[in-house]
Image (cartoon, rainbow, N blue to C red; front, side, top):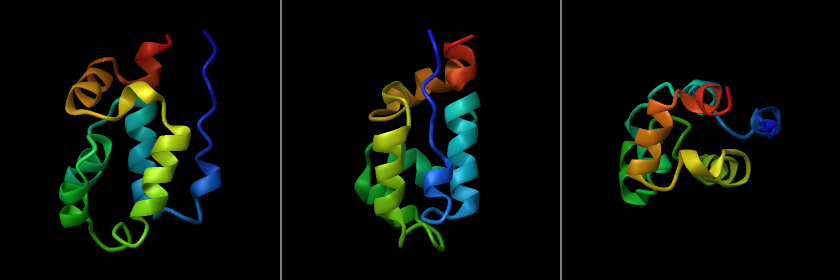
Length: 96
């Protein structure tokens, strides 16, 4: 099965670089994220907003849009999805 391209570049000017790089590492390799992105990925709005650091609170909408529009559906939406994605080592492990 061919990998669908994740368009990271489209969001380079909308999401802080460190946040986008963390998302890239998580999506591609299953690398754990910090508390803020974990809350976003597991659909915990209150947790995400409360844990957002500089730059992330202001761009939370763009981060959510990136995940919804670009990230593979199996890597977000619930804690179980995130755990499974990490176990599979991201897209690298799922599509190898």
